[in-house]
Image (cartoon, rainbow, N blue to C red; front, side, top):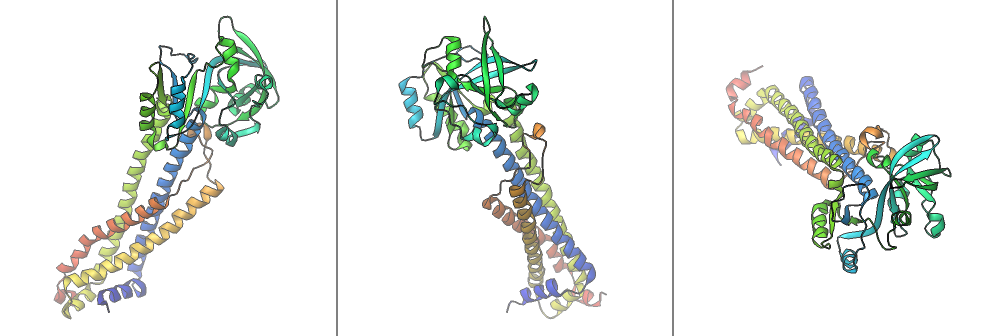
Length: 406
């Protein structure tokens, strides 16, 4: 029988000392809350990054390819992608899909209001999966009928609210050129991305409208939006695409297009690291305090065990086993609390956010088994390693003095 483990179990489970019981419960609560907060912090930060990245990349793609010139306006210069370029994009294993587009500045006039906007032209090859998820009302543009598609448009909820428009309404749009060109449109769909830079800046229509307004050739486009399979490899994929482009083309990643958003997301990682360190310190300090108090309260027992011939190392093992039990119990409760709150938020979205400030209407949660496992292991190991120091106090206790101590 493992004598040290047996004694540690008696101390931990059947202790009758009320003061040490209170301290032990506080220590367990400290470990529980520390692990739960760390778990939720990692899940929320990862959820934030994933959701916001998906919002931005879903609308404009991961990498944009456009003509290499000195044009810095919203209206991109036209080009015709070569067969070699299209073949390279199609055969690239890192690319999920790509689609042509063009942009042109315009002004919407409706209900005695005007709104500056950027008209984004797309064609029948456009991937609608993302926009369908964010469709508030109406439907997507019907490209099966080219005549009908040229008169249809999709706007954001932000623009619809500002101009008091709804699905089915008609309005006039003036395209910025010399002279300005007037075109009537009918709203077929209203979407809500939740990112103000996108919602207030773009509407979606037929690419052929821009071609006709600018007298482009039927196969000319303003750019190519590319969606890669693994967003974690964005920098490498963007560089690879750039190196394989024609000399008259250049590429730009979504992180370069929206630097403010992605800089903010990178700062969240620093906040997470600071919070993890602070929570780990709280748990460790609680456990050190609890162990010191248990050792001091068990001074008589330590003296008796030493008098019976037990070594300092064996006595230390008793309190380390006891600490392992407390840490383990705290981790168990922490997992229940952290995972419980995380799953509750993930499936109910009970905790809301101001979408205009955070780009999201609720607190996002992204739980991964590996994150939970690593947090548990690191917390357990750090607590035990740190607790070796206060347990060494046992070697300083004299059996004679300890037996007399009351």
